[in-house]
Length: 187
Length: 187
DNA sequence: ATAATATCGAACAAAGTGTTTGCTAACAAA
DNA sequence: TTTGTTAGCAAACACTTTGTTCGATATTAT
Image 1 (cartoon, protein in one colour):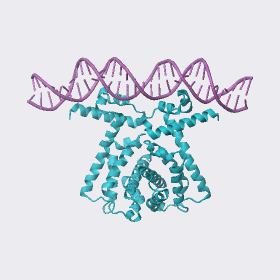
Image 2 (cartoon, protein in one colour; image 1 turned 180 degrees about the vertical axis):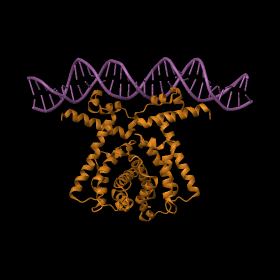
Image 3 (cartoon, helix red, strand yellow; image 1 turned 135 degrees about the vertical axis):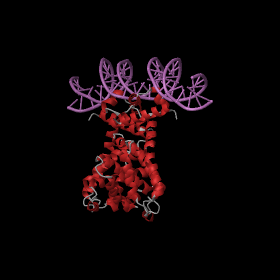
Image 4 (tube, chains in turn red, green, blue, cyan; image 1 turned 90 degrees about the vertical axis):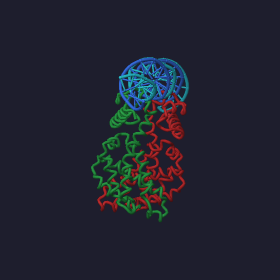
């Protein structure tokens, strides 16, 4: 790919992230992004059709990274909720969100965090649907599997919101314990 | 209150609700609302400062109604999660959302449902914090109470989202059973 | 070196925002 | 029924944002 394109794309992403930290997504204008990224108006529209488009692509970048790595680890180890070590995978995801040089938490902490959590939830659903739930106890009780998947990802996202609201005071390990305490009985 | 004000306010609410069902909140303009409500531009701004302001007031109207009634019932009966009949109160809330002549589900089903669910979640948190959780088993395990409250309301809202996504196929009673199956072990 | 193309600034129409002004009609209270 | 008050209205306003077009310039891959 043309180096210029890559440079521009990075500048836009960076500007977008910086702006997200200081003002709400819905109040942000394309002009703001253009100014911050220091690019031409035409250039922005050559890369993204709309502001929403930019948001979506940014989310794909962010979360696909977190989850693709998670899935790779899963291939070598056993991370099934039932047979494996769920605590390890949960802790892993939480740490990945903290450590990331992509500043995921910075964005999630912003006023617009909810928007991202919606995307986050979609990825979680996929992850869970794909591998985690083989042979749950709940199937015996007639609970539909997709209800269960939805319950777990809602709870996870809800927990992350709570975590953020509490200034990330708890360690990923402690959080994983909390999560498993309220969720594990359900799976 | 002046009859004219009430009439205008209703017209705006109705137009807003109708538009919400057909297009996303963020794509909606004040002009759209004005046109649909068939009122003057000046009049809209005399009632609401911004579109966000309108949304917020609408949510207060909607959910405060649901929950105030719920809380009244709680006073006469015992609806504590621990000592009372939680299934009854959950079923009650779900039915209230279905039956309401205020078309809550119509709005929740719209593209902008997430926005409302955020408000919904806030009310749920209040409701739970106020009365539901006296003497949970989880306090023994060192789980903070506000984590638990957050978990339950996240799960509830997540369930409603799932319900809507599945075209409200399940009965409130069945849904309550599902919910208690995955939540009750946690309280 | 050359052909392709990414970026740029300037300008543009179109649409939306939020406010002001002067007028009219509806209202509550006497 | 009269009177003072208030809500609603249309028109106009300056302003911002949007998304596009244009030709010119600089960078890139080959």
